[in-house]
View 1 (cartoon, rainbow, N blue to C red):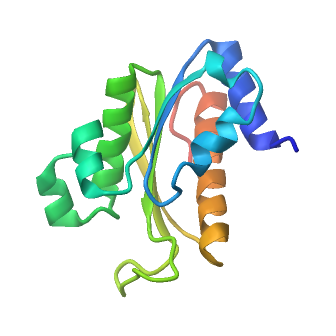
View 2 (cartoon, rainbow, N blue to C red; view 1 turned 135 degrees about the vertical axis):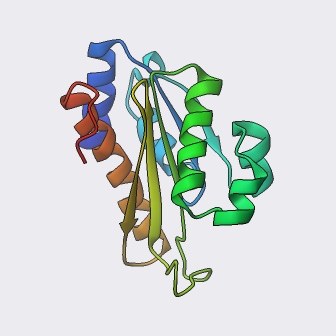
Length: 164
């Protein structure tokens, strides 16, 4: 089954001769899986991390412990650091990072189930979008990966300008 959104993103990256890396927490590799399901994705996708544990975020992507302690893993600051770290380590043109609460447990009044931060790192910097999704764990993961791909697609179609 073809994933039209992932297909468009991979084809656009190929046309632009640009590369992508991913860093995922709450989606557990779903975003990378969707990208690599597209034939020829290896031309644009070289690195993907599932950094579920805080230690992985720190050791693999250079997320500072003070960010995790001050803001928590599900935060704008950590998503931003994850995306910047993935782009730096992979030496990619773009990096997408996702961190959130997929549920059904783990939500708080401040960060209910369905809260997801998506970050896009480019040469222009890092932009973070806070999203709220609903449904079961799978639906939240799917919606989050959709939103990440849409975020990248919008940036690619607007000449790398953040437009989301």
